[in-house]
Image 1 (cartoon, one colour):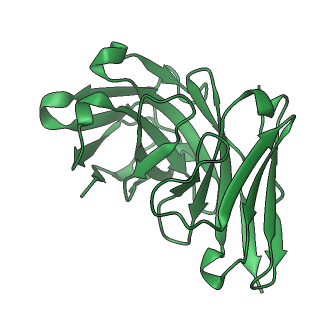
Image 2: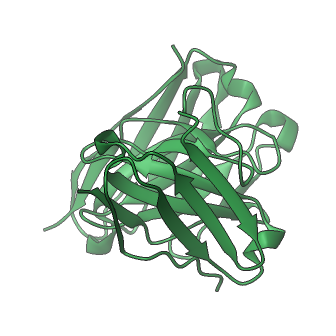
Length: 106
Length: 122
């Protein structure tokens, strides 16, 4: 079965750039999305169609997807960005989630 | 306000059944697909399945882990989607979310409910 692999954790200093990767076989041939989930809250879509931001998502969130890797980049990371991040791809009609990455801002 | 509200979670014994609901408001529910996603405590997101709109012939598809046990349905007159869960196992214990997906290629799950907790235990 198809799997999406994310690093369990990423750490970044405030104001620096955070990079979270998501790997899967020929992932670049699919669309990738990213979700942010803070403790006790529901997930929030932050990137869709590889690199588009929904209304209300800050410009510091960006995405890319090529080859076997999709990447979520957070520029000028803020303390409020500390959360779990999940990548998601569409395989035909089904949604596949990565295991999630805990972003720590310290 | 665009909103999804789940209800109906609770405690159920192994082997039992439970039906949870997802009520939509603030958008044209009939034109959207609805997906169900669950999250066990301290774990990641697990996609369960989806139901398309009438334009998509209400087609459903399920994850292998729940196929044959879970059924998704909808009542557009009530702006509500349902998740019927049968033959429940302890490993089905989780927070269950309904989410909206608009019929655009590569679009994400852009509206999520607050979740309803299902506990399977004797």
